[in-house]
Image 1 (cartoon, rainbow, N blue to C red):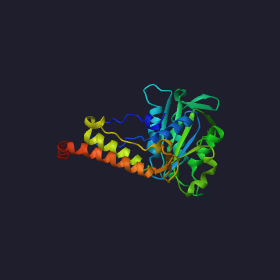
Image 2: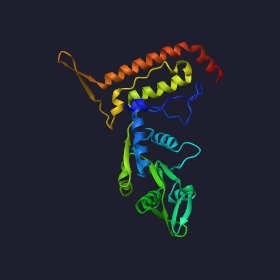
Image 3: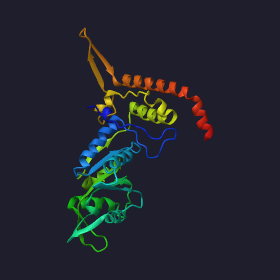
Image 4: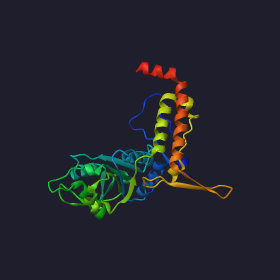
Length: 285
């Protein structure tokens, strides 16, 4: 099964603009999402690393919503968006809100449900006077010792049923987090390549301007390299053998260009057919 065959249908409301929380999957993001799901659902902490703006937060949020969806679920998640004021005490308070006493010093999540704690942009957490981050130490202590010391009375709390999913920007400060990241399964997320961007924007524009009228007719051809894409910025080379025993070499860049041209022309034709509807939309705005 190819990753491109697992992409869910993209069908938000037509002609309503682009929602802020929309996420358009590609074969590459489907592969990453599967890895995140596979590890986190088996209680392994996950750390997603990538440049700013690659879509780390959107990918994790989409995955957690799919995992914890439904009114009745034995799993749920909380999101902690880090900034310059986010410290260990702030996060401890949010975690404690979801806990209930079990016995002795043992605590678990309310309803004994499994909880995912999504810590977004850990690198932005508050830095103290010693140039450290109390939030990093909080996470490390919990994963290291399966519990935390209460910052209010210094009593030990054994806390289970919590799995951490963390995102962080790739930069030189990672060397300061060695004691923490050694506990995580690390996944690196790259910037979308050209064929991914064509696929994403074609779906968004098609859904907004054309909607249901042309949804079934717009065919977006993703490059075959997406199904096997790994963290590399180089173009791979595909070699095919003809019937006369000669060998032809074709780079994926040519395939990507062909895909881009086909998609752009097809979309342009459909947009031209909808000129009057687009003018009406702009007039209403």
